[in-house]
Image (cartoon, rainbow, N blue to C red):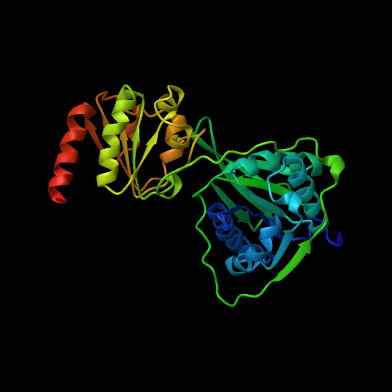
Length: 337
């Protein structure tokens, strides 16, 4: 299994995740990037899936672009285990010696990627928003935000050394399944070595969400500290509902317990890219802008003319939201009686 060194191999390994019994959206996005890179390098794309139910998803992985799918089918992989997942990813990377390993910038990716890199002496780039291949020098180029999103850093991989990247959601185009595409599925039925499991999951609580997830919403109305309290979110929810959108928030309302953590947008929250992003009472800290900068259109309502959000907005209105939002709600209701 170690016939090729990482300098010779051109394999791209995608570490897959699942959600509600199907391949997670971040994994489909990783395939979109991986296949484009493989077309440039002339290499293949391989996928690693976890858990007993993963075998049923192998055909979907092949349709999305995998040439080979590894399924860790033991029940011990049904629930996330940092120790078990790290050991397995490290082992698979050691055996197939890929040139590049891609994970999502998710809870799994943030946990596993640094640990695997440390074990294998690999290069590591976290929270990438772009990955390209420099054919002239035979290396991967990773682009990630720096200084709280105020600058972009481009880092080159070391030739002959495994490059591990976590990729931010919505940074790569989602792969389109191809019917009839052929690939190979390999089952890894062994249980993880019990001696490597130092931490066990005691309890998991699912955060209940209603309607469309923030990451998938086409319209988002987001509120910041300028709303003054939870009552402001009741108002902007009316606006979001009329627009067929969902409500988001900045760090301040979350810290003040006006809204749940699941609504936070920004560097420590969700990364979104809706068609329309309406920012109300949001000053525009760099950490928040990082989370919404990829929105197609940004509209800002803020009574502070110097608010940083205006600098990245397509349309801005300097006004008190308590005056403007009720007028918008009234007009929208009149348009859709």
